Image (cartoon, rainbow, N blue to C red; front, side):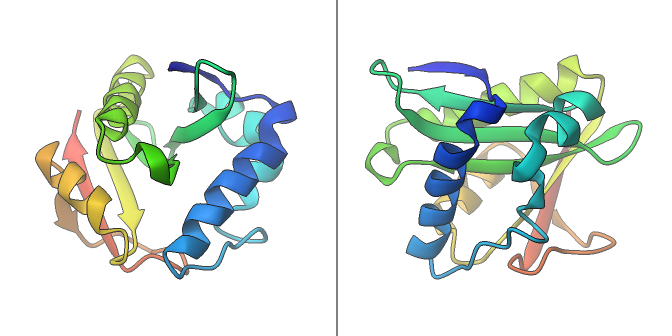
Length: 152
């Protein structure tokens, strides 16, 4: 498995992966709001002191995504961390989260936060293991019902 920066050419595969996972958990994709960033990954991430990376299998198939999005001078948001169903529970989610935390540090952020939905139980345990704690953000996206943050 390798991690690499996402490109515009990856958009359709990324959307199919993320939207499929959301639907598996009973959540609806929001291409006009919460997921609008996927329409122009470069502008929303690399062009805005952030990163959006994909995890590829040895065969070149995109099997995971993870992003760091700038929300303030010292504050970033963990976004779009998704992993193909057949790879969950094997440590790949930890690799994605380790990568995101390191990316946030390298980009100069001091705090990382995230929004998530209650139905994504597996990720909650992982975030808690990594020291994320519940907090109330200034807003939440339409499909999320709680937020967490941690110092980097």
